[in-house]
Length: 484
Ligand SMILES: C[S@@+](CC[C@H](N)C(=O)[O-])C[C@H]1O[C@@H](n2cnc3c(N)ncnc32)[C@H](O)[C@@H]1O
Image 1 (tube, rainbow, N blue to C red):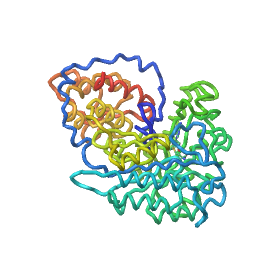
Image 2: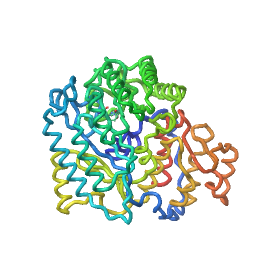
Image 3: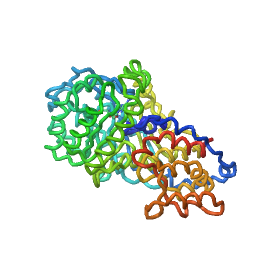
Image 4: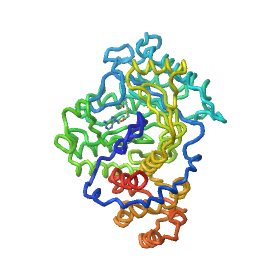
């Protein structure tokens, strides 16, 4: 599940995505925001049709069950306890065993929500990606996953070659369960490993150890799942650089085709939030966290992974199609507790508590609630979303498209604000062919009021790793232009 704000972005949303980098190198944020000429804001075009309108072809499905809550986690989850019939640590999958009624009841509610989502788009394209996030979706029995997929298929259509991802935790599935899930169409596994040291896993309150990580990797391989990803977390309490390098090395040796690396976010109200202060021992300092980030980037790129998004690395052909929908600011449905959809330019979050979510589904069925939010699309929100999401990717911000939507003067103002960072090498300017535009040329273009910058500079992107490390500050600077 991805999370809100410019700080956090994760694998899928409870709002907006969660960003892995903290506010590094505060000194840089002292650069004064240049004021956007009011005319630039007045001229912002409303030609946003191509940016967010149209029917979604992606769906996020939230399956909130976990055996227990991890100490860093603030997602909307329901802890079943280690002894739930669906959560036994050994013998994890027995065909025919009784399902936990909490899971069955929730899935029935979810199915009602999907059915009550009646769309009236001009066209009805099939879903091309489905992402089961959590929680720990691998705790859900395959026959219930099947029910959800059938309902999605009946309601929206499901492409035969859709990417269907599932977040899975070590110790919650075995080879048989994974095979059953694959028969239903699940073809991408996102494995929550987090660390390769038992002491760190224990300190995070994970319900599994390293031996179960290896077992899970074996199941994934033995079942022939090629498209699989591993999640790791850096900057954990007591984590040393040596431990982090070891986790990265063992991750690389396990040969996932995709790796997500998240910098620990210490969330209020979590156990870590109560115990620790970011930047203070036993958490690493900001400089150490930056070192962890750079180490991940250099080791993973050295092992042949492309760093295609702030927290995401993939081998050729294995970018996560579902997450790319988020980064491109394209629409997506969302179903389930606390999940947030993006349809018609509006983000809409479902209740995070089961009781309220249950009422919401009933209201949806009887027409007292709608499924995609009310109100007008706020252009500033769309612009800030586009800036936040595109600067997280290695592709960067597409200036021509942005200029067409919000006006050339806005593009010019963003470039002015970014000039010092182009000069310092934190931001890279690219032309149509993605060749670098040199700083002197960029400065000349910025200084010339007669010139439309986007005719010469097609993309602005953050440099890996130094620009990505400053992503929060840099993105905030462009927010200052579009939403002062
Ligand atoms: C929705 S969670 C996946 C849940 C899944 N049950 C698991 O624990 O593997 C997606 C990923 O977000 C990351 N994550 C969750 N909370 C985090 C936090 N507070 N800071 C950094 N990463 C976090 C973890 O790497 C996790 O695998």
